[in-house]
Length: 164
Image (cartoon, rainbow, N blue to C red; front, side):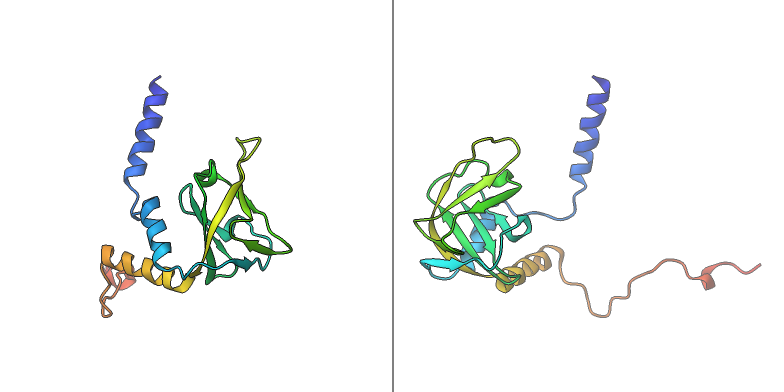
């Protein structure tokens, strides 16, 4: 019991040391919606969508990236159980084309044997560069920008040591 208490205390302490504030799921979804275009009927998958090529945005939406700066916001019909904890997703498609109201997202998790198929109701193109710039602006607002003439202290120089 004592070891458990010590472990919980350590986890709590380390969790409090986090320096980067994170956006809530709703804030992240709102950011993506702000940088999404008008709904489109479909989009083409350039290649197989791996874990690093999608971003969960809660249990009703996700972003799928076809390149570093081009993606699509997929909004789902209802709650998609396991989407926020999935290690990968499967997206149904017709010869590489994903269609709104026809195709689905299937989250793959280790704990769910029969995953839920979640229907895509809306597809909106994303501007990845604008999202990245907005995140950078948020960080600068929180932390402030560094002055251009700031010289970083790299520690003691050998000339700082006393001469014998």
